[in-house]
Length: 139
Length: 439
Image (tube, rainbow over all chains, first blue to last red; front, side, top):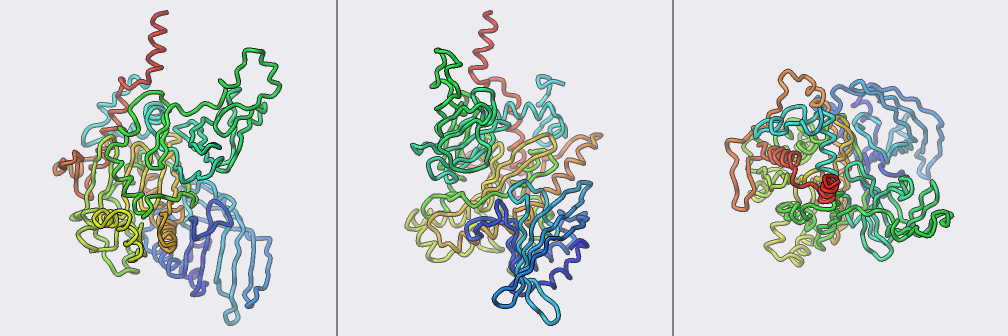
């Protein structure tokens, strides 16, 4: 993600993908409330296609990023999926402006051969009820 | 240079604007005074505060305001400022409250603004009258179909006169609901940008940029739907329209009426079915229902800073010459199948949020404009596109082709009028001057 490796990142997802970044509050109801991101697989593909087009100006220039991940907790779901929760801190630089994003990410990982793929990812941003100018990089 | 010496007539002409209007702190202060602290400014929607005690914190210009429904059900705009020593009495962006209590010295106000308790009140002597010390109301409040506006000036034109022809467009936005009502409790996207507030209002009703700035997202749509996006082509039959009073719009009605050559421009009623159409016909009659569905909402700027696009109520908040905040409040339609409202929300998320495929690219352009403005050797910005071919419609509005800069010219000519106006001073200011002269 820090390298903006869009195709590689997309290949990590299952076909029933849900990529969800709530806004306003962590436990919003997507049927009645907006989100910052609420992508199924098709929308995720569209997001990546756009970012790769060279015409997504919000990523021209691209964000430069480094993130730290810690406080990892792993649970097993009923169907054998793994629910992995972790904290992240992300430093993002673009147009001479450096921002810090932080939050808790909840991944639902499905076993795929000798590896895993992401079926759900929910990102609980610390600042999801605040002004955010650009969230077009991979969060 | 003081506000009195700013020559607005030279800075703004029919076809061009001087870059100083985006850069000069004196002009910014003058805008706050004349546009935001005097004229009508949108505050919120009654659908955000349906229950007694429900409130939202908002701003009119720089003034912090509480929009609240009091215990008797009446919507009020109260200034968020304790009558004692000015501390804000309410801190959370939204909630429900019986009272607002100033934490500084404990003065407590009912949700209709009345002062109900003063700490150690006997210290103020016998002449202190609590009934005169309630929270100050915004001097004038007006509503149009649930849209609440406030004016910090005691006098001036009525809200009805201010809105004028924009009312018909607000109707198109609301009346996509077969009950004629909006639900405005779906949260808010808040974004900021490093640019002047007018860059956002000029852009919101600009039909010239979408094929360029938004081509990456249009390409994704094209791939998914196999349809061509030609609404913003140089030969589009869509229109731009100046409704007067600074209210301007992109008008897709003619384009949509001509038949779906591409995907509908306004994704506000996607997933509509016979059930929805029937409900619309029952409520509005066949002819009006068709008109409403064809329009698909509106794409409107209500001067100075209220924008209706897609499913959202958008508010532009000026902060400084080169920093602006923007709030997007998506709306749901009452009386439609829930799938239609979900489609409205997902259409909005995908396009307009800080991670969306449309708004972030616009914001990038604002940053580039604000940077470019500082090359002041040639300080002019050109707004002449379509000036030679605009015409006046029977209803008095000025019309141009979709990519023409009719809306921007409409904004700037009204802006100039407001900034140069000396006759619309609130009466109490004029009175003060007379008193001073008599002394």
